[in-house]
Image (cartoon, rainbow, N blue to C red):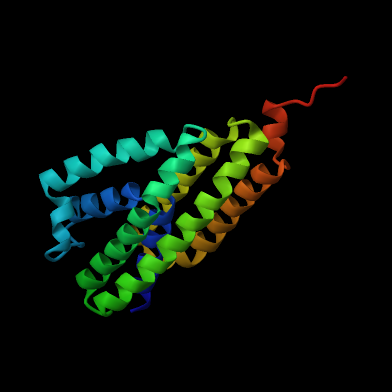
Length: 196
């Protein structure tokens, strides 16, 4: 049960950052791995149509998340979607292993993904203001990288989530906090202070 819990936490945390990256990775794992098989109805995401739909909507979220001010609207729209996807991914993993109640897994995934998405949505306007929008695509790419890493580790080696989740969680929270408060060394490099 612990590997299922760890895998679900990794996927739902990822979904809080980007709804469709962990969903795509879950679908591809089901499609190409002989050791991971999603049962119905969760396997619908790994069908040809499911993957095509994920790719189309993922492009909208990824592009919108890189554009200052539009990213906040994107976050507001995607917050409930991210929470639902987090619940779905956790349920899919629990159904695949069969050692955890899928409804409990869905509730945990929904809460985790929703909480992460709320944090992200709350931080982005401050990052836009403090960095004049320059930090938005940078922090978005960092979030995407964290989502990809956590999703792959969650499915390939769930025990690795025990290390990666706190480590990457600390890294992304620190990066967002520093950017939102104007304490980012990268932003100081990209936005040197004018001397009067």
